[in-house]
Structures are given as structure tokens and as C-alpha cells.
Image 1: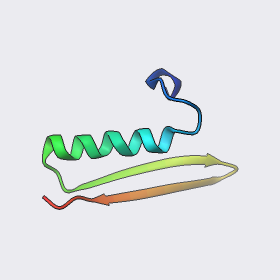
Image 2: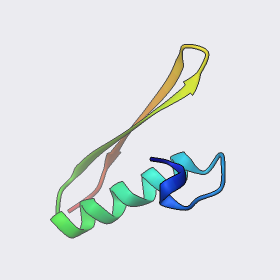
Image 3: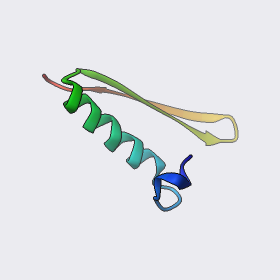
Length: 52
């Protein structure tokens, strides 16, 4: 999936964050969640709180 989005390696987080922000605005939602596996058993999660 990531390469199919047409972005350079290492830009997955930025691409997903941008997509979530666009969808939050489009749907007029307040909260979003982006998660990433970063290898070697590690990961990161970001919760977005958008003022509506």
C-alpha cells in the first residue's frame, strides 16, 4: 500500500497525517488517530484534536 500512494520512502507518517487532517475537515469530525509501525517492535501513535 505505501508505495501505491506515490510518495518517497520515509514520508508515510506525513502522508497519513495529511490524509487524516483532510478527512477530519471534510467530515467535520473532531478527533483522528494515526498509527505507525517503525520496525524492531516499536511504533508510534498520534491523536489529533481538531477544534470544530
